Length: 482
Ligand code: NAP
Image (spheres, rainbow, N blue to C red):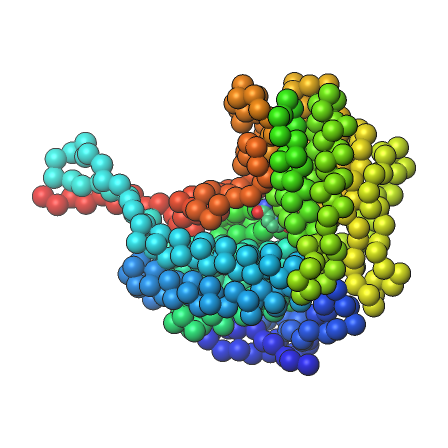
């Protein structure tokens, strides 16, 4: 079995002490995919030392030159679409088309970051005093710790490392334990693109073992974390002890509201796609449908028609439109919520069961699941399940729909399907979410700020021009020149 390593100061190396762990294909858990380092805090220390050592010189590389390296990286990434896409499918299960699409999206975001390296603009100000100039510049934070989840094993690390580098920072990437292979592949591409030693470092291992060390190290100027709210909140508390800058991208419970809509077929198509892509394991997945009673029966029928078209299987099979869940623990979480839904009296209309007898051998496959008549206080309606489960909540009309939409602790994305412009405006104004989508699913674009409010996120939005608000500090410079 192939052995992979950490990347520290330009060298691929095993974890201190040599411990390793294996990852498995969630579609065929018998298949071991490779061995990866179980890093220790000593590896974190070495990686942070390497990043700190390289920080000054990298910050001095002119922005456009850093951008040129990132452009090369983006090209290499684009060219690896199918090869890296296949790795993504093998290690976390999403269908190959989705996985290759993710790589393409990451390349587009990297190209945007490459351009941003030439747009690190400041301002000049009129001076109160004669013979003075006053201006602001953006400067890097130094070392960035980038902690990423498994559901977007390519986009999430690239969305952190590329803008960090563009802004003149060095990085230590800690990918999810489930998806280290994609991360190692990406770091090889940074190396091939000409990123100098120490500028990008990779430490693979359990967040529970090495995460605190990374967060606590005073040489780490900023921590960008994407993952669950359960891990993100204590991480933020910890970082706050030393006032480290933090960017959190956390969970979601994203509503799809349907009220007075002329195109229920289109709405059902968009909702099911946004709900069940990646087996529902997307932070922006639509994970509750809130529909006005007068259109509920018709919409539910159309949702079921869409769900029935889904082909669950191995993501490498080209007929597959939905892969397995990414791990046994995700499968068990979904089963737990389905049980809660049934106990709470929701009406199961589709799915609600594993598709295999022995998931440990046959894969973590779960049927796409639809519940109707879910009450707004049900765990199905309030909590992030992160699986292929779509609860339908019936409401009297638009006002009640808004109330229900805002009734969770999350505020990431929200969609409205309506033919009435007045609802579109009221929805965009009233719904507590970082991203609002009218008449389409929750698909974001590669240059538009991305983030959430309430317990879905904290700090500057990632992607687009706001990324540099996190990856730089503002410095005011006064010069007396007379
Ligand atoms: P997770 O369990 O919170 O893990 C995220 C990352 O944090 C992993 O690398 C994990 O390492 C690491 N980690 C775990 N404990 C840590 C600690 N004490 N200190 C520092 N790092 C630690 O989340 P996940 O299950 O990978 O991802 C799914 C979650 O991510 C969902 O809630 C989803 O909504 C959210 N997400 C949000 C966005 C967004 O943009 N808002 C995007 C994608 C995903 P290990 O893997 O080694 O445990």
